[in-house]
Length: 105
Image 1 (tube, rainbow, N blue to C red):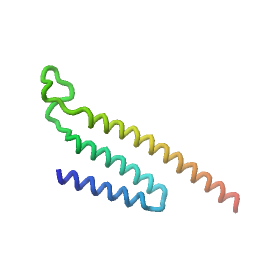
Image 2: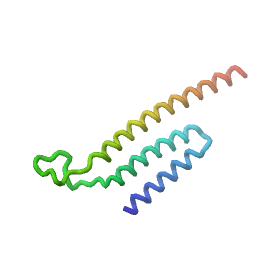
Image 3: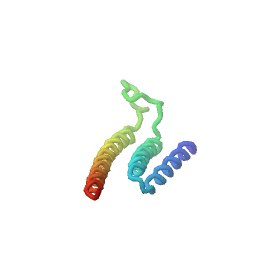
């Protein structure tokens, strides 16, 4: 467990470092790493283990908890939407800046 926490702390520190940079592409990568790290933390906190299969016939007393899996799926979808929105926003900002620089010269 401490190894998982160490990996999560390293990934969060990398994402915060990238989010504090001035380059907007680095901020995008920082957001991507942060969302992936938060999904990883949810997975670790849910104590997901491979003791029982996902679909069992008669052995219903040893099932895995489906809530962390559903939360991770939701987090992945939200992160994908956020990254798509930020990518479009960055593209528009760069397009407007290039258009303004052409007008000035």
